[in-house]
Image (tube, rainbow, N blue to C red; front, side, top):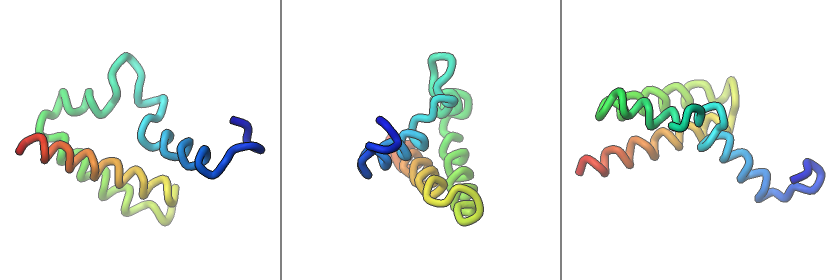
Length: 86
């Protein structure tokens, strides 16, 4: 994808990839959130909640929409973890 020929859909997908699958969080064969869950167990929900709060707090001052997407990602992860517990 060239910067000059990218469609709005390609820009949106690229922006979401930076939130949901950043390269620096996938080193060593395990995604960072999976390692954190492995270490914290059900405590991963609290970790996610802290990140939701962090990104909601700073979105206006730092990364705007990208931080809102990150907060959404962590909220979705919290929901999935709670659903898995039953």
